[in-house]
Length: 125
Image (cartoon, rainbow, N blue to C red; front, side):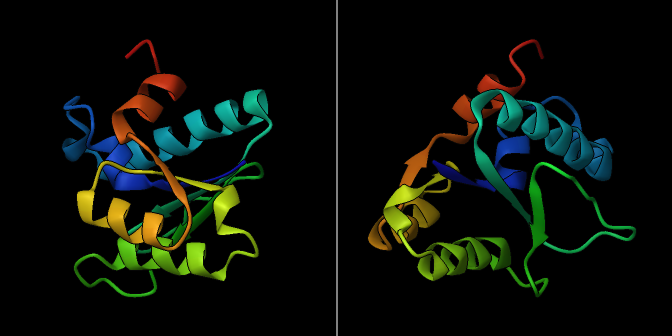
């Protein structure tokens, strides 16, 4: 199973003060996804809205950003990734964004609630 994670949607699913340190929250998500991907033997891509400087990197998880900083640009990038896949049916998108859910399902991918993934990868917080 290939996972595409709507990064800020998963981060925002828990009101833990992430907005005070957005970059830190993004880095913590990547680390949690790395551990989870190794345990689950999952291929994971996390998509954020705009590039950071310096960029977040990982040897386990693909960290990508929307090419533009427009509204819904991360959603557009996720949909683009689903459409570009050889088999969209093998992709599960983690998000709770209703419009994005409709778009990726129409493209053939399945979805998984953002808060459920957050609890799966970070149950203690």
